[in-house]
Length: 152
View 1 (cartoon, rainbow, N blue to C red):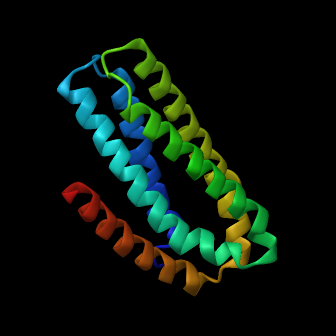
View 2: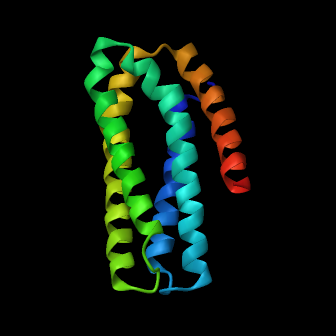
């Protein structure tokens, strides 16, 4: 059986969870904490861009997926705002850690909700062929975005 969009997304989701955990466990103000946050920021941005293009848009076009897609897009926006807030804070301070915890909680909530609800809704909308095609498109765009964001 060929890979589906859900397999590709779960792989990225696992990486996001791991980066959040490692970032929160890192020591305040260290190069390791800054590097983990930077990598998480890039992974989140690349994932969101590719996921929105190759999962949310096709589901948004179906009446059954309209509300789920809107909700997921809203949560991506909330995550973007938390990342932006964190970039303006000193990683040695308690306020940074508090905001980082909020980001981690939002990311975990979004991924859980997506895997438990959104995947099921979209799974009823997409054909098996489309799920495999979207996986290939997602992976290509995700890799392209990672490269672009790492170079920036």
